[in-house]
Length: 317
Length: 285
Image (cartoon, rainbow over all chains, first blue to last red; front, side, top):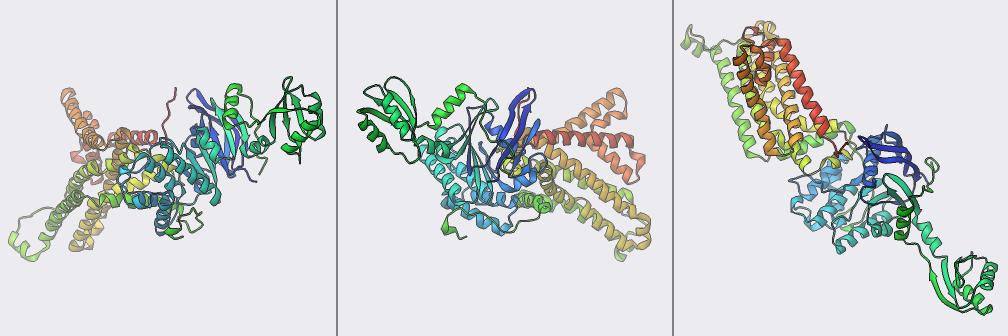
């Protein structure tokens, strides 16, 4: 799959402060999450990819277009939902979305049609003739989403899309993002400090800390692996039990006298584990699927600050 | 796709040419301005001047009026006549800029709309050009357009001989008006980008001219020099106009200094615009 974003030694500085510090790697997922605490550089990375900030060193490519030399091509492909309140005063939602679609290159009539569709799609159909100033925060977020998708972008940047939303509005926004990801022929980059938002919508996660990539996780892969990872506690010491599990094709390690960690082998299932235990006269006291949640991954990344196991730029081209 | 389907669909249809996108900004800005009744009333009032000047051109050519006036000349139709017209309309253009200019950019900055414009295939220069074009169009409508119509009217009545001898007046009307248009547009946009608040920006535009003119007068009186007028932008532009209309006798500033002052002023406005019109501002430390 062609990489959506390739980072090639990207460095961004504001004065003497280094905001993004030599980012390298390649992202090709359909939904990419940018995670990190406040001030980690998530929004700066998005803004640099949009061409708002000029890289101090290195570069990045979006869908194969270099941000230094082909930013107009990049902008032709993208839709952007900014984090802050952004709108044009004195306009109704329909005028606003139409205007934005026209600026993205749609002819006036197509822009109007798409503006109606986008506003109905995000759930503002009945309120589309109201002035944006009269909208609630949640409605403004939806209007921002509508303007980002009205022109049919290939890549959608969503900067903190659930900011300031109450739980039902947040759920609605997450549902919309998932729906866009599933139905549209587009990639999306979601930037958030809310782990649940990213976990519920993204396949790939890039965790940033102090301007550096501290972890890259393919959530789909992790989810598949996690389904095979178990922790078992037995009533007796488990040496022979572990041997039996290894014969079954499982990777197995003792995590204490009566505790085992194992990764199920191909074709092995949980009932096989119970069968081996019964055969060796071992009682299983507890069996957990040890699932590393995104929260675990995030916390580990924050503690370790380890160098990222991220695919190098240019690999997937 | 029909509205009732309510699903997300990518767009694969036609796209407008890149060069024409700035016109979208101009079109929307004009639509908002045209809702203002005050603006329309002001524009109509502005045409009182060209009407009076047209009458002054026509009357000496009317046989009945010429007979009535005899040897008395109502007004001489010469470069000074057109200079007077450009000066009067230039003042109206200044008032128009003070009221219309800040409304073009300030609301976008106040509501953080620039990232929405600039994340599209659209540069800052195109944004500025789109916004400026509305103001330039409005000012053109009350300066060089009626100016050239009056010139054409006079040429039609006076004949080809007058036209051949005075064609440069048309060039002076056009050039003089455009210098003023560019200056006013840059000032209006730069001040609006700086203060971001429409009312304050309007006030500041008037302050830039009137307070600076006051200072210029004070300096000139105190130091007994005409060079103080370099701070008075009205005087600077008037000097350039007089030079263009070959009325050098009434110039209070050296023409080179006037051009240099205007260039510095426009350069400062450009730098201010360049600094302030950005999608995001960052603290550099």
